Amino acid sequence: MKKLSLILLFFLSTLTYAQENTLKTLAHLPEHLQEISGIEILEGSPLIWAINDSGNSSVVYGFNTDGEIVKEVEIEDVHNIDWEDLAIDKKGTLYIGDFGNNESDREDLAIYIVKDFLDQEEKAQAEKIEFSFEDQENFPAKKDNRNFGSEAFIYKDGNLYLFTKNRSKNPDGTVNLYQIPAKAGKYKAKKIGSYQTCDSGSHECWITAASISEDQKSIVLLSEKYVWKLTDFTANNFFNGKITQYELPGKSTQKESICFKDKNTVYIADEQESKKKGRNLYEFSLK
Image 1 (cartoon, rainbow, N blue to C red):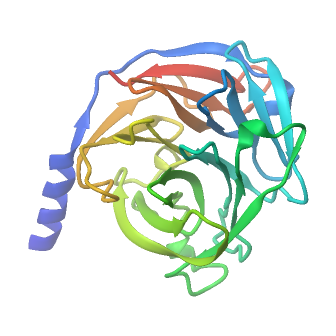
Image 2 (image 1 turned 180 degrees about the horizontal axis):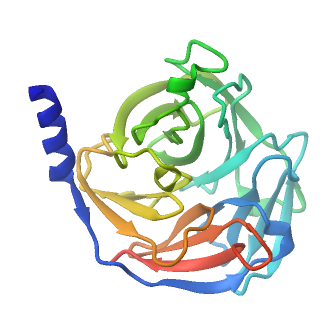
């Protein structure tokens, strides 16, 4: 009981709630981005770069804030099993996370590395990271421990950090944080932390995307209903600083993409759910 109280006290002491901010719609996205699952901005390009998730083409799309696709880059000899997020480093490398794994049964999790991405034309070659989670013993994992899929990752200081999407039976909202070297090879992802987004574990608390600010002092995590901003952390202890939770206004939609526009603003995109719902680009203030 004492241990539980300490955990609860730590949770409450690090989490603050922000006032509800406006979710501004910027554009309705084209049909090519019906299942948009990850976005990023690269220095030197005015475009927002995006991918679609499972079963779609192995293409990275560049579009403007009016929702117009300006460029497409096909990643050669790569199959989009379940692309879920994008990450970038300061050298212009684009990382593509093929690690969607709702049933925690995949044994082919991968991250693709495209160096000098903005120098690529219509086609690009990618290096490959193959990985598994160091603490996963069963494929599929047992139903009460299906927390071995991810839809969110970032790059920082030579490593990639994955935030899990907890699809366990009766989940408690726990997100696990794993670390992998950001270079081609085969690895066991090392578990280095965890955080409880909510106590119900409902789909509104599933982490669907992540991004890190240009100065690497802020990280955002996304769900269909919330944004969490992580600040004042030390090294890769991302959950030991200040965590601010923002509730996204309006109806919940399948929001699976987020990236920083600047240190106080993020872009968010959602998938199409019906003819009149989703497939939009939004802007959201973190002030």
